[in-house]
Image (cartoon, rainbow, N blue to C red; front, side, top):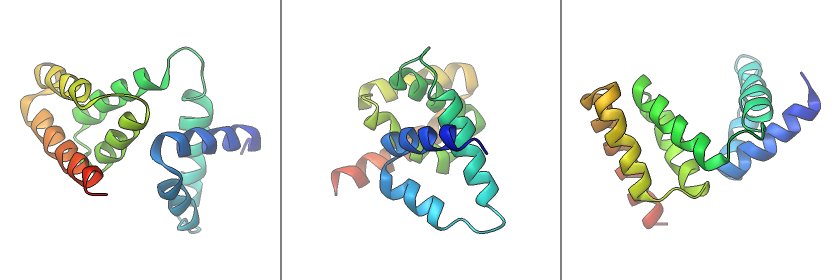
Length: 126
């Protein structure tokens, strides 16, 4: 593991997903899933998210579209929060899901709307 990329990834991951979530993920890692936490932090966040070519807001838009296409609601909820943290509005998230409805399928987009609505309600009640 590249310690420098891991630390940079940890910083970015916390800024997008929130320190509480990331700290809990790292602290709850065991011998079985710790390598996955390290891989995600170092490569997804420390290598790719750290690149200067796209701002975080754009990366969030791309992630929301891809996660919708893959129909991964747990990850989508996490990245809806990240998208809000990265400056996206509800209206922009809505547009991403409408766009994905056309190119990835209406059922996938409907699930994303449903998941995002749950996140928005949770965030409003905090």
